[in-house]
Image (cartoon, rainbow, N blue to C red; front, side, top):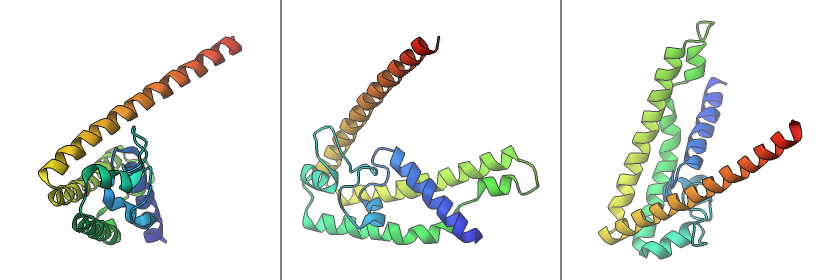
Length: 175
């Protein structure tokens, strides 16, 4: 039961963190959803130029069939290692309340350890991913990521304006 709970909690945490980061899982994270495709949540989703997923990145980076195969293999390895790596993660909430009260220090330390592990795994993945790309493709990938960040910033600014409009509306109707 504990392992099932930990697995579910970890999966939700890892997927949640990947959803919120730009190109969080790269091509590799697509495995949980059946390989390459149009997954909008892991950095291969909708972009400022209207492209979707892997097809857009393949076109923009001009990936060769060999590169596609290597990236797919990298993705499969990452997905297979996911279950094995779960035992390395701590359970911050469980361990923080194990004594019957909340131990803030334990919670923070274990949460930081988990974040470091996730960052190391992503860094290892991206290092291997970048090794597959040519120098020109790497440069193009960086440019595409900058475009994604600009697109995300514009969307956040639009959301902020929308929320401010809602706040103003509520203020005017509540008072």
